[in-house]
Amino acid sequence: MMPLSMARPGETVTIRKITGKDDVRQHLAEMGFVVNTDVTVVNELGGSLIIQVKDSRVALDRTMANRVMI
Image (cartoon, helix red, strand yellow):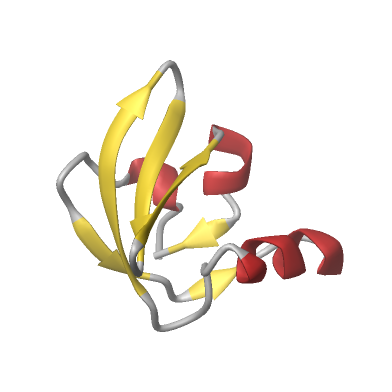
């Protein structure tokens, strides 16, 4: 496993684990980041990642992307 922040733009990956405190995991789950979901890294801008989750695009900073394991 590696953090989502290591994925390259254009790459589609499957979420394997979400780390962090309960409130952080809950916040990510509300945005669609749940285990066994496929997400696509759309772009990387200024250290943040633009992620396609289901039908939405979400921006995550590196700290949050490091909590999503793929």
